[in-house]
Image 1 (tube, rainbow, N blue to C red):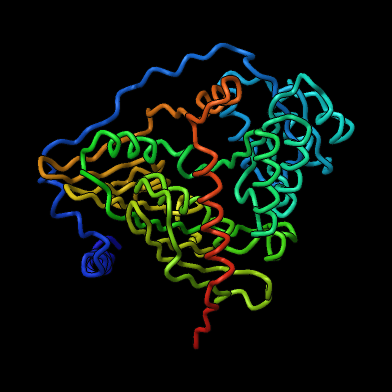
Image 2 (cartoon, one colour; image 1 turned 90 degrees about the vertical axis):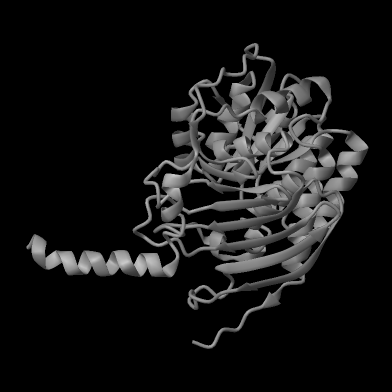
Length: 384
């Protein structure tokens, strides 16, 4: 049996090499310094610095959002959601939260300073507006805004109330290798950044709610999962003004879901650099994660590649792997022990009225670019 399998294994090995998937294999022995980030000190924060609540939990991202704020010293005090099954699961994970009888019970509680939400996407901005009008700050799951009309109203109310309207771009804030890339770029190890390339495949899975398939509810693929990538483009290039050069979207494999988009890509140009974004819903079943997310950051003196969730070549299935090449060395860095600063920084901002986690202008620009790319996207028509 083993002898019979040898030709097949050799064929697969040769095919993979020829395809370029193992393009780094000859370089592995030449990596002069492999590194692992040592266990970093956790950011120490005082407990119960703020009280926060959660309204609407239609996406599981809310668990990571709540934990981030707790790491920053937030005290979760209340939850309101309409769905009994989602409510029960959340309260099991966060038993300290009191179940509120209504949204207004939370909004009218003067002790609550911050509201989080991962409600149905097109309902997030209207909720955020009500939150700000009640004198509270707001952290939404992405997409935090699903239309340019919503964007205009959110900006207007944010300016009037001077409250924080933030969006959890978790592919940067909650990914340890991406955080390490931020530190390295800030330290200048690859020189000024010229371009970012974001590849962001996702897996649909077996069960999705009805709103998932309706573009009017989730905003379109570039608005939704693309918003993460616009955030990273702005962050790593330092861009403050940008334009969408080209965008396209399509439903190429789900004809039974006519209001769904399963592919999109974008080219960007700005005053800090250029960018390319590809998003899709085509993660294959055999992959060990929901998406083999990749980020490449090109600088004048080197480049960084982040493998966010898995690393097929090295076998690091948990992800958070970073590769760096510059004029001095080649490095592979395991980033699983990197400390994530977003939660403490965001709570600092709530307390001190600062913008250390993310500026309001950056938050809005990332989403505005996504919305413009979505609105003006060319619809693909593949002939298969």
